[in-house]
Length: 516
Image 1 (cartoon, helix red, strand yellow):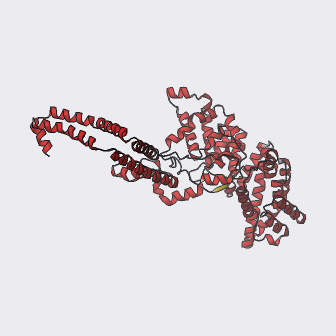
Image 2 (image 1 turned 135 degrees about the vertical axis):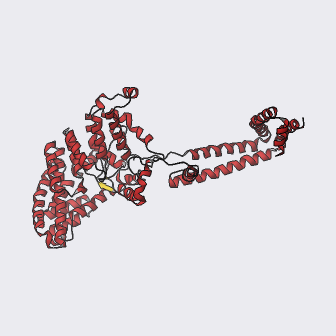
């Protein structure tokens, strides 16, 4: 009997405790809770804006999970053997701005766009990078010895287009200067036909300079530098002539010129002529030749590009896309060929996640810039601008892409910045793309940093406790009644359990437990 009284007194004690709590206590409690949750929210938000992740989540994953025996199964761990330095090097190389292999002609294409729309398709940053490229490829230390080359050395540094064009004409009055013809073909010619004529004149002058410098290249460092410059000029001219042929519909001729150029100068990979070749071969629907080029350049030791990854995906999709049906695939499962195609699409999307929206025409295209950032929006625009027609030509390829591309994001470990088949997505792409792309274009951003759960949780907690504090301050008596009712309800299960324990356990055992 004595033990039952003790158990029954537990409930009376709780009731007395709740009755002794004053409204001021509830105001202080809710106010303090609101303040603490607000401070946590502010810190979480600051940490997320600075580092892109939740502090609480990072601590739980990095420190608490290992203590609890958790193992990170992320595929990135397989790359840790290469060391952090390799990862950093790869990240830096992926953030490097590259010359667009399929860049348009300023006079015949970019300027015509400006005349029609009144918009500038190229940014100052992009054109400045091109000016640096021209100075690197088309000039050398011995230019001051030849008057025409000395004029062109200054011309490449000119910001004003008309000043550059005037300097090129001035150089041609002195001598048959290959780089002067290049500048006029790029910037003064208003059609591709005119540009091709000027490049043919540049080729004649460039071949003569190349042969002369080739004979003298071993006579000293300055002759070697001059020969290197003349080689760059000759390769550039031949590549642009091949692009002119491609634009004018002479695709087979363009393919032959590109193949000959790659055989003649196999070490000059910085021009990425194989990407021009892939696009031309796709136009000819020579898919076996495309596969042969991919087998050579889609190597693990070579840098990837959207052209490489998405062309490989297109070829695999081509084998199954004409008969692919999402409903049938969900019923019977994917065949081996369909699985290979889906995996190739996932690989391509992980490398550059911006491309599908352009291929599926969910986002409008603009003229591609002269420079691109691999894995960035600029590269996606450059790829889709030239390759959308090739995807449309393959029956069902865009449908297969539409059904499968978003599944890539479910495969990549959280957070999205981590990698699955490639190194983590570089965080520098958004900044560089905003410099490369015109202001009227809405830059595609990936990954979009969604607010972590703990920020949303603390925001909700802070708002809820702040509301409770305000209501308690305004209506202390009424909120006190609600608080007592809430606490009574909260402790009701505990009282129920205590009563059940009292009825089940012997009184002697219960007496010993209560004395502990």
